[in-house]
Length: 441
Image 1: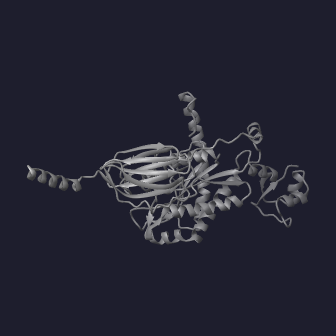
Image 2 (image 1 turned 90 degrees about the vertical axis):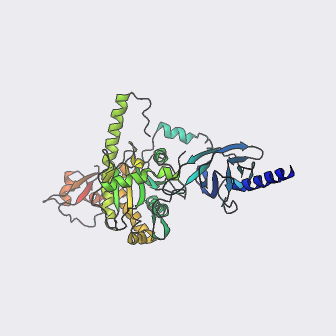
Image 3 (image 1 turned 180 degrees about the vertical axis):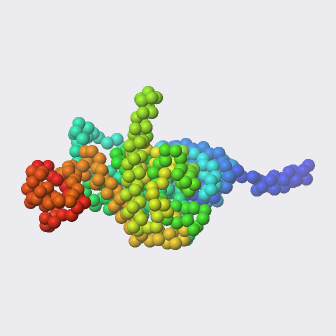
């Protein structure tokens, strides 16, 4: 009998270490964002999990079934997150328990992500930052009753990818997400210094924002233009050149467009994702409103895209000499003119070196700025400071053969001195084709 028990003990000892774990927790990553903190568990395979919260003190408990912890928790940088400490243990012989000690109540959400071309199985835990209700002020009431007739033109600047999603990766592990954020910040700085403009950075750090949320944030900011900044990648490293894209009404305008749009539209699968409101309209009216809005915004998108492309051609080689069109999801705002700018091919070694350079990043930002400014100076939105300024400058008039400055002033009932001052003219010399502004008499 004793021999039987000894044999059974040996058998159990042999079986125990050979337990087939469903998954190893291979790595943990953390991404602080303005409205949430994301914790990502990289797993060797699929694993079930359970999440619950505890109070006094505030904690989040995550049980990952049938798994082993191989990652180091001590290496996580918790700075700027609501997590004070993170610790682990075994709930039983099979499950790993992770405990997050919090500095405040942050409602959690969790979901699994299937493998893609960049990552394997992942468990994502988001700690949502509660929105603090803002007290209404007299200023709020005033704004509701009377719109400010001199508001700024709002430009939403969207640096593509971020956080969990590095975007394209070039030579030397140059990440698209870092290059485009640098360019976005340079563009924001230029617009901030320009009277009549207000830049809004959709992403101002290394974190991921779902594609649909990017356009919602632009709408929430009251954007007059949405600019999404990217760096191309293609299977052929010889591909090169910058390009500007607008939404296509009927799909992509080229094979490259279809390929790029497919790549960008799939970034939510990498980044991890757990509009114009027509809900209260009947089907026919909703269709008409959507069509009218989309037609107008697409026309403006193409116009501003042409100016941006023209100015980008002064600092970078262009992939195509016209604004291209494709079905980029991030451009599908029917009420906001939107363009996507590919600043160059990060997969091309030569262009990757330039994109890494701060001087080239600044030059690209300046080209974007010049194109945007030119568009809105020519076509300022109603009720903006730029529209008011244009009205102050008066009606543009193109000089024809036989015109003199004194004749133009006399025809319009204004003094020659005022006409000079309004157009910053140092003399009375004008040329055929020159545009001067006729101030209101």
